[in-house]
Image 1 (cartoon, rainbow, N blue to C red):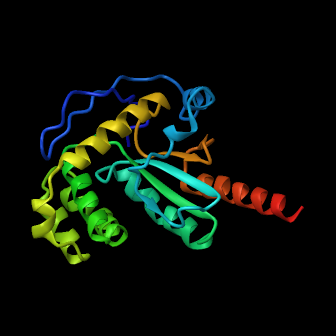
Image 2: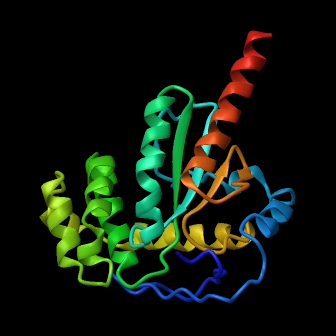
Length: 218
């Protein structure tokens, strides 16, 4: 987990590799993002290129700055899936890529190929489940897991990395705008997670859902 590291945008990505700079911050998880969120435009959270899981018009949006190589992202994933299952019509998950580990850019390339093939969710689940076998940069295990989950590996490897590179670069810029320090970082309807933890994320989402339901009943 990289909560204490800030993100700076580097130069161009090389195919299959991405170098992210970081500077140490000495503040709490939510303190600086909370101060910055009030000064940014709403579209900094969700871009046209952002992968969305769940109904596109759901009234509650979880934005996750996500690294498929991040062990904490893997730990949070069952809780995120539980939230989506509990509120299938009310909540959507928006992924923003933040490649901070060795092999992260290639894993994100796999996810983008999976999205193009319509198998993003099963491939993401498979990558995270198999993460201990590949998160140190040994990407063969990631490809094996993705193929088992339905990815056409031949087509995926032939897919240009240009699109994935542009998405990563744009997401890095927005991460900096929001003072995101690392992964996973969550925002619920534009509000940073007040306290870090899967249960706290669930509680914050539940509060948003209940508030919206109450408002519509009045």
